[in-house]
Length: 157
Image 1 (cartoon, helix red, strand yellow):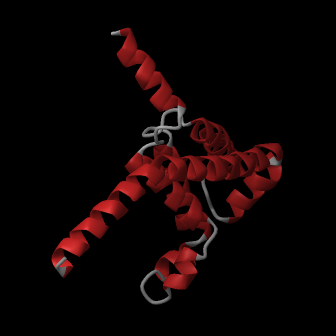
Image 2 (cartoon, rainbow, N blue to C red; image 1 turned 60 degrees about the vertical axis):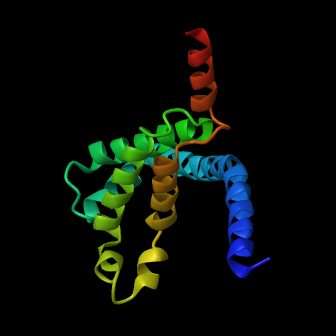
């Protein structure tokens, strides 16, 4: 067997394996980060005055309103992410919220993105943002309410 044919066989096997692992991987990301978003959002909403005070210290306009908005997006978006419901829609406000978090509370990390990338990737919003982008790009996977509803809708037609 020549090296090119061996490479193509191995590549085909790995592609099939990766495809098989896709939905469990997306489920794990949704469950873990959905819960993290829920907990973070709930914390903001349960400690609204403290959150609004922090937002005010960052010079965010209408700090209480924005604390409610950010906490609600994280809390309820996290629950929907957990369920895999609205898999392409729900990540969008979460992504926006994490971009705002970077721009306001982690602006130093954003400015250091090229000079000190470790500062950017170790900032608190990074993994939340990454998880949201992954779910937006790949969808919630076959192990989600979106997939279940899609099957039900296609069988009803």
